[in-house]
Amino acid sequence: MLTFENVLKIFQEYLLRDPEEEVLPCKRGYVRLTWDKDSRYCVDGILCRTRGRREVTEADEKAVEELCQPYLDWRKEALK
Image 1 (cartoon, rainbow, N blue to C red):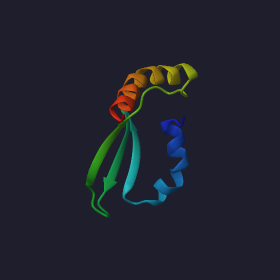
Image 2: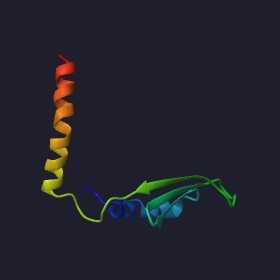
Image 3: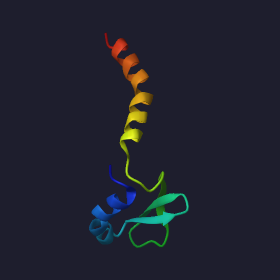
Image 4: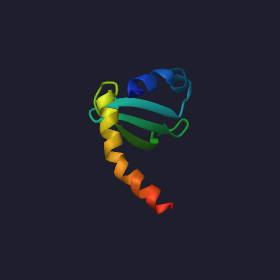
């Protein structure tokens, strides 16, 4: 699974060229800012929360599967 830092590295060149989009680190994750061309005010700001700074482990994936399974079972029954 990609960490937020890896995603930023992948899109780094694009972000450097795009005059209207900027991603900045903050205390609670990252903020994506959208600027209105040459205006000094941003039009939009969205907080992208991050959880931890590690790759997903097999135990993480198993925990997610266990959490999702009841919903998958319910959906399977509903589609019958």
